[in-house]
Image (cartoon, rainbow, N blue to C red; front, side):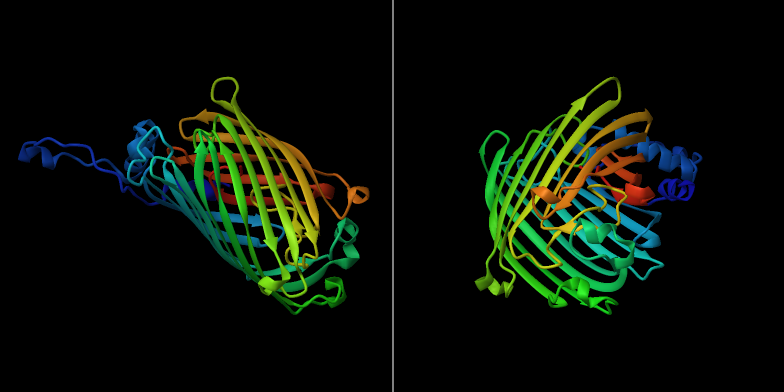
Length: 383
């Protein structure tokens, strides 16, 4: 953790905002001693946190550090955040935001992910897009809670995954947005030691989906919310005739988040999610528990099934200047039907480093069932 903080201190940053006006100074003033490197960094950070939103929330920042979890082992991640404002999208509207993450680890795992939330025409339109490419030498337990908890099922597998999805949302009323959604992903599994756990499904999977997204969003900031609510409903169809082979299915993705300021410097956030697959999803498109945003601490994909439900409450507390912390507790389940629901606990604690206004570096340690755990290095809040 100390190494991460030191890397944060020495991280580089490029500001795309308009510089402050300057005044002419005497030539002799240019000979004045310049502040040291670390003082510049400290001045930059504290200045950003106190600056008006128009300046502080725009610009490019890049930061990196090590992390460890049970899936990827020891790794190094680099994250970048670019805040920008399009025409007619001045404060107090939140800025558009592009975050990019690259990661490589000693387990030969690597990933590149780009997430863009674009606010257009005075927030009358929004475009949200995700592009992700990852190679994962991982463990696979099979489908269902029973297989996931059976240690004898643990088998090695290599998976290459591409994913792209995007939606275009149009504002119908204050905070209410509706629009079309498209989804594409490709999964290729190789070198699986127990192929019977795939239940005779092909190693290679392609999935094409179209659907509709409904969002109700009153959050003050997308990246680091402190108040408001967020309701997300995403209905996607993966019909067989749309090149989905024998794996035609329908997916309903629901999320409800609420944020409320408590005492000074504290925010209480709650998040409830549900994912339901109807039809014949493949091993690669099942609901997967555990990632850097939900049920943090669980091995991603150890528990997988047709459906998933999770709930978490998190306390976020500002500590000092650009430092903060978070602690959470929650529970979730993957299941095939109502009779196969088994509740899995989740809890954790994290450190927050505000290296730009409304942009946090996130370092979390999550715990799951039977001591399963992970360190997570990311940008912005988990939800």
